[in-house]
Length: 205
Image (tube, rainbow, N blue to C red; front, side, top):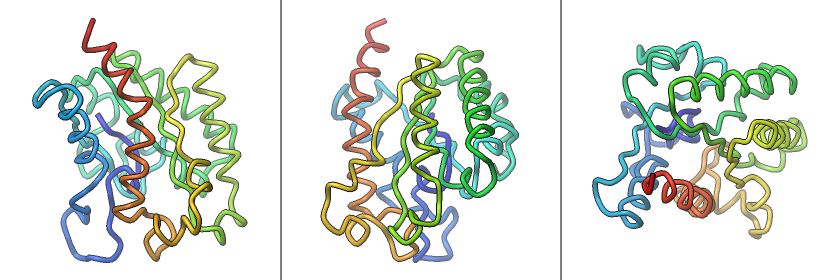
């Protein structure tokens, strides 16, 4: 089950209106293709429970989730084995790092209480002009720290983008927030390197 914000939904700020305004090669679709290729069609089902504009607090409370319910309700309905969130980009605008850590811990505990395995996904960076104005690196490091503290897998991604020349041109849409098709594909390749062995182990249980 995919939780998280519009960059996990695959929001397209250019082609409006659509309902949802979601690109065809969105994260859930890309992950489903990789799961099918790795394990065979039908072995793993990716359920998209993302919501544009959400924070971890929204994920938990259900705000912005278009009547999908709270995290506890969605977990009860979907009954996932694995739950992923990339929530960070919007959190920076509303919370300090300590509150973000507390929200991460609560999200992880709720997922574990439902019998599922939580996995954290580092987000994509925003354009350099925004990086200079925000504390995203501190929040990404906080995600890594909480994951390490609680024994939860963190799928790396954030700093890997910096090795690509002019990455903000090729990997981000003009809004400087949401990835292009190439950006989403790069995220999925990076995520799946670490996610595949996790899924493999769970399927063997």
